[in-house]
Length: 255
Image 1 (spheres, helix red, strand yellow):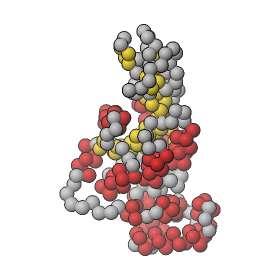
Image 2: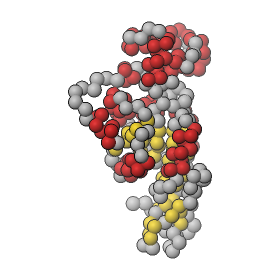
Image 3: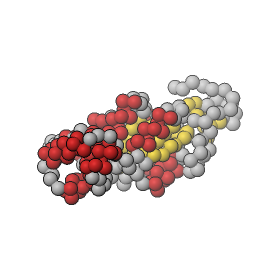
Image 4: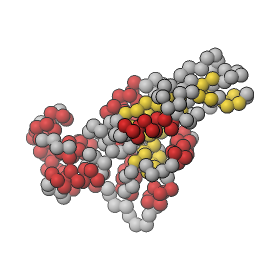
């Protein structure tokens, strides 16, 4: 499946050969794994992975667990969508898998990050690992380009199965998400899907206590444009107070 290479194994490679399984080093240190056959030196291409989550301890735990997988060569981590995009663009070779939450730091929502990843890195597998179980959110993520969707209550074995399935070009839903997705009746459009990317960004900054002036500065737009987006949010969501907008943002992984 991958080209064979001779000599010392470079960073980011793994595989098997006639003599048996090649093992990887690196563990939980975050250092790149290096694979080498003890008999022939024949190795295969492995994959770089990015973990994107707003919680440091969750990222560290996932990095540690992912380094146990033979097919993972190196894991980068990011707290925000903006940081994840920057690291994905800088990685060489490019990442072939991302494990990401939908609630992120910064102003780029997980759904928007998913669609951006799908456009810029169409071959990359996108595994959503979140606590958001709303059926409309699942559909929004899958329509944006996610390859798999799991809840944070899942076992690591579930994540391993998801990564394997996505590596083979398949989609994967955890058992609970499958039951939610197959529920009776129409799902209805999730409110987030009614909002534009810019409206989601404005909503995020409102929920974080931003003023019209500070939001305009953060997004590089005029205060008048911010007010227009505020008006659209109120009409689309039928929410007219900052407190209710903040609650909505928190419930939908925007703040």
